[in-house]
Every structure is written in C-alpha cells, then in structure tokens.
Image (cartoon, rainbow, N blue to C red; front, side):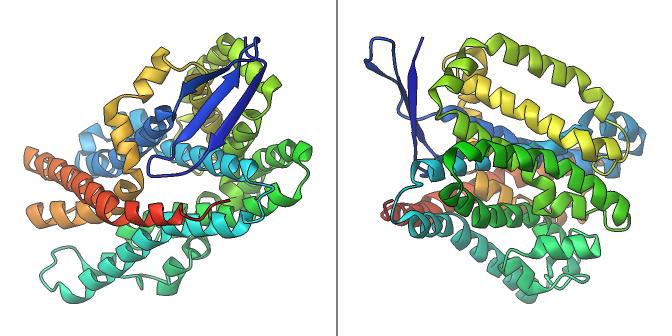
Length: 404
C-alpha cells in the first residue's frame, strides 16, 4: 500500500483539494486533481437544510394528522447542519496546517475568508433591510423582515454576534435571518483556529482538537441545567458546537500523517462497522425534545457528527467506491458548489415566493402549497447560481490572488 501521503488544499469556488501519495516504489501517484466528494458532501448538507425548512416544518405545521409519524421520522434531519461544521473544520484546518509556517499566514487567510463570506452576506442583509423598508405590499408580516424583531439588535448580524443575543434571549430572531447563527459560529471559529494551529506545537494539536470534542457536550449539558430558560444557548454558541468543528480539524490533521492515512485505508471495514453501529443506535436518539433533551445534548450531536465524519472519511479513502460515486453525483456536487448562497437565501426566497402565492407560510396544506414550495426551491437555485457566477466567484478569485 502507500507509505506517504501529501494533501495540498486551496479553497476556490468548489473548495478543491489536490491529493497524492507515494507508492511503495516511491513513484507519486495522482488520485485526482480535486476531490468532488467534498462538494457532494456539502450538497447533501444543503439539501437537508432546505428539506427541513421547506418540507418538514410546513408539513408538521399544516398536517396535524401526519404530525407524529412525520415528526419522528424526520427529526434527525436537523443534524445535517453538523455536516457543514465538519466540512469547515476539515477544509479550513487543512489550509491552515499546510500554510502554518507562511510569513503571510494570517493576512492571506483572513483576506480570503473575507472575500468568501462577507460580500454576499452583507449584500443579503442590506437587501433584506431594503425589502422591509420599501416593499409596502409584502404579504408576510413585517416583523419577520426586521432585524429589530424582539430583542435582537441590528448590529449583531453585521458583527457576527447574533448567536450571543439568541442565547441570551432564547430566540432565533427574525425567521429569514435565523440561520445566520451558524455563520456566526464559523466566523468565531475562524478567529481562534488560526492562532491554535500557528502557535501550538504540531504534535500537540490532536490533543487540543480532542479536548474540544470532549468538552462540547459537557458544556451543553451544563448550560441546559444551569440556565433551563435559555436552551438556545446550547444550540447557538461556539463552545457548544465545537465538537463537530474540531472533528473536522482532527481529520485534516490525520490526513497529513502517513501512518494514520494508511490505517484509515487498511481498516475501512472497521470504519463501516462503526458507521452501521452508529446508525443502528440513531432511533434511540430520536426522542421528543430534540435538540434539547439531556440525551441529545450529551450524546446525540456528537453521535451524529461522528457518523457523518466516518462517512466522509470512507468516501475520501476509496475514490471510485460506491459511497464516493454517490457523493460525486452531479445533483450533489452542483448543489455543493452554490451551497453557501442556497443556504443563505433559501428562507428569504421561501417567504417571498410562497407567502406571495398562497397568502400564508410554513404550512403545507394542498398541492398549491407544494407547487409554490417547489417554485421557491427553483428560484433559490437560480438566485444562488447567479450570485455565485457573477458576484461571489470574481471576488473569491481576487482573494486568491493573495498567496501564502
């Protein structure tokens, strides 16, 4: 088998990775110019998020007779968000590990991150503010379009601190910007991870990442018992979600260790048995109260994260295998390419399309509602595709003119 592996990572529109390893004879063998499985992994995560808000929530709200069955069978869909965190930890951790000795380490990293995240995010916030202020015929209740809804200050969204306010007031705020708490968590992680990788000795990094994985569920459970009236703190704060992010970063570290890589490749059957065991135990996690039951807070999130991480590793260590081929499907890779825009826009588009056509939102009562929801999904894809091609991609390319 192989005796060394080198992974070079660079984030572009597809967050491509180059992967190569040396065979026993010492001859480099190129596995691929990029790893499309990661685009597919992101695409699946985006699909789960859209399914949750476009299908699960409306059906539960609009079909009481199907509530119990559908609620139980789809409750764990919300855990797809952990896939975003795992992938962020893996990709960003890998970039920082490869560039850790660069003299332009911090400058280049933050310029590239700014170009990837901020422009379209701030454009989205400005557009929503304008829609709230100047569209008098908008049928959806205006408070849903206000950053001032409840106790959420407008500046928190522009400073990526909204998750603190959500934890304090136990609310996700206005519906169309409620999902931005996860972006706040990632941005806060990006402030900490570069310093850890730069200044902690490389052999000690796995212990740091494992500490984050172990501490997160303990912090979640502590907050739930200490502040039972603020359970959203266990959902929206970085210390409570760092297990998934640290799992991804730990995988990035392992992928750069020849011994660990060979172990992953030669023990794929063991990994598959672990995945099957985790999946078999998932019904035990699917109890009422997710995501705030003690079982879910202590075990559930980490359980789901570990399962998704193993699936990602299995796909990456066997290019061309069945799992790899599934993640390479054009439906998933195409969705993954524009995934940031889809995730950012999908609730706003839902409100704009579904509420305008049906007069109500977040209930699925008829074929008319399903048609409006389908149209909202197509519009979301179109808006995200245009945003990526004509707005985000040129800025990302400029950001990559800055080299490590």
